[in-house]
Every structure is written in structure tokens, then in C-alpha cells.
Length: 217
Image (cartoon, rainbow, N blue to C red; front, side, top):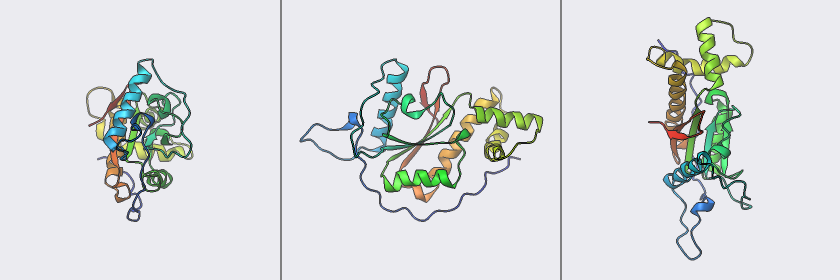
């Protein structure tokens, strides 16, 4: 039987969020309607940016306007090949990125995401896992061998192991199944938390070879 993820502290009710300024590509022409972009529009821009990146036509670098606030919070992995700003072809500062090994959640991560949603008004939270995650691979190796986990790395194994246990008997690539299960679990945990009720929360996976981002069901 899989060990459940440890309980996360229930935060206070969310405060009203301020308006979120639009992405450069979503800025309407002068004199037209300047309503805040929706989470769907922001997600479309991120996926369009990924298409530019993987198609060899990125528009970065360019200067982000002074005073702009991030329009999306991205929970990503610390692995070097997947910096969200490059994968999604967005200027530095356009995304509020919170990166932990294996997308592991703790109170500091949740507080950072809540800050982006409530204080900065980001309408979208994107949980971005990636193929060949080293933290997932390390967790599976510990589960296979039973080797002791040194120091603070124990937290990573404890938090990723439930996804590994749930998928162990599935045919195919155990690491891939675990990565997908971990990514969608983080998405579902954030969706269920009232602190993030103002934002749309989605999960996605980055292909290690092409860099292509695909949404997870």
C-alpha cells in the first residue's frame, strides 16, 4: 500500500488579488479593451513560447517592461536543462518560478506560490515536470536497493516515493510513470488548497530530447 504524502498546513482564506498585467504578446493596441488576460490566454502564450523555443525561433532576449508583475507561477524542477523561462520562451521576470528537486512541496514552496497568486495576481499556476528527472531516478534507486538516504535528501525520497509506489506495477517505464504521477499529484494538491482558488492550475511535462511541453490530463 502506498504511503500517503505528508499533510500540508491549511492556510488562511485567500485575499482578493490585484489585476495582472498582460504578456507583451497579449497587450492590446492603444484605444482597445485592456481587460486582464485570462488563465487560458496566459497558458496559450506559454505553449506558443514553447513552440517558438522548440522550433528554433525564440524571441528572447528582450527587455521586460519596468514595473510589470509576473503573469504565471511555474513550479519546476531544479535540473539545469529545464529553466522555465527558456523552455517557454518568456523574458526574465515574466514568470514567478519556484524550482525544487522532483517538484517536492514544502511550506516555503506553497508560500511562494501563494504570494504569486494572491499578492501579484497571477491567474495561472503551471506545474512543470520533465522527462528523465534525476530526483525521480534517485528515489527509484533507493526503493530498489533499500540504501540509506543521507541528510536532507530523505525529504525528496519521502515525497516522491508515494508516486513511485502507485505506479510500480504499471507496464512500461517506471520512471516516466512516477514523474507523471508526481507532477499531477502536485497539481491536484494545489488545486484542492483554498489559498490558490483564484488561479487555474495545470500540469505539464517537458520532453528531454526536444524540449516540447505537453499538458497532462
